[in-house]
Image (tube, rainbow, N blue to C red; front, top):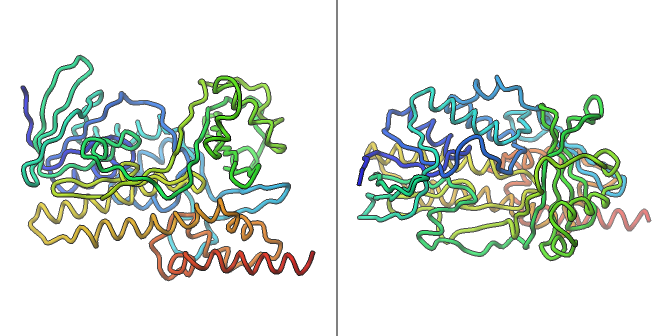
Length: 413
């Protein structure tokens, strides 16, 4: 059986794996990326946050992405019962990128891997990890190709960036229940032949049809638009028929968007992902680290998936680089505590979204510009900036501000 020796084996070639590979390759380490699928391939997670732009820039992937002219995302719109709340990323508490992209991930991820391969990064597509054995920190990973042939890779470190595949959590029994309520999503793409002119045709929108159920609309620069609902798993399952019939029926829930998408053919049978949120018992161990959705995945309401994927990837890659240079690394503090800190902030916002507290703040008639700037920074992905009160005091501040807003509303009604 063929065996290959590398410094770092990266499982998964999506944004998380690509950012980790970009950094470690630039630092001169021998790396190998294995990816189960052939690119381009469809994957959900099409709305990015400005925070991740720093990561693409740092590892030299920004130029290739810019050349693709993806749809610019300068903020986001939330709608409920005729009320509108707009967030503009240029008006946020934390300094940093004011925009990002809305992307068809098949094209976006292929651009990342094409750019890496052009730089000389070894990426093996259509290779599935079927087993991992550790002797101390040294791992031997067994890989199967599409013909069933097996090979092995010996590595000093493994980065699991396998996303929804969650390779090491499955193989090492690391999965844990999430504290986020059980929600599912159903989604597809449509080709918009009569897309509205101007901003209306390009802006990402979250249309809230009930406390726990909402529609996403994400227009792409190629004329396609991603549409999908998120809601309690039992509620989504209550709609009759196949996934096409379910989504067609659910589109009637949106007074604002029903006409725009009525009669448009779905580009593929709508996909359903059940009980979206995932967690793990631990984010690292001797000889391995979990990044992106392999570690934690939250509800998609604030589009945090790719940002956590790239933040965790570049953080892990930098720590591995230091360790391979025989520098001391405290993985608990520098990785686990750090990443969990950001996840904890976003988790609060997800939970308070579904309690209704965050929605109360968003749609409060007396808008507080400073509070909005601080919340906007969180929505832009800057959840590690503790100069922001809505980061540092996230556990109590959202509840407190929502309570005040409710009192003011009662006083005027």
